[in-house]
Image 1 (cartoon, rainbow, N blue to C red):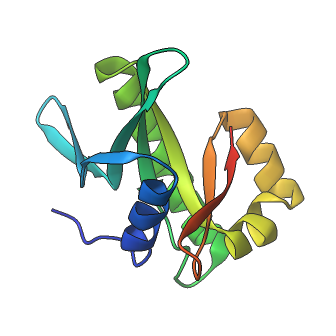
Image 2: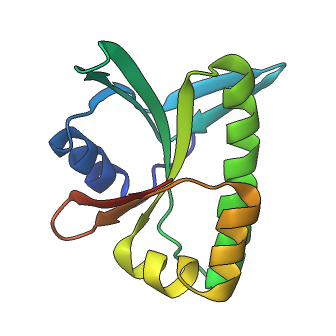
Length: 138
């Protein structure tokens, strides 16, 4: 099993505070002979609709030699996971979790905005210090 991201527990706590129930830690995806692990699986009951909302959340800290290298890795992983989830669990939505500083320095810049738009990437932005969800960017 892969090593958890340094913000894994932070995002897990933030999701719980936001009303989500963690169902999988990590969420396992099997495709053929391959077994992949998405950081977290969660769900919550939408009382108005009386139905469950299911998500998968891949947590990325963007530590490493460069933000561009981390971005390439994160987006490649996101696209692989999203395609598998669409096949296996079409009622589950995949999100990429990043902290506020990464959102503002990467995803609010021209390259990040274009990649979000062209690849239909859904983000959940969290506060590292407060352990809360700051924004859902779908």
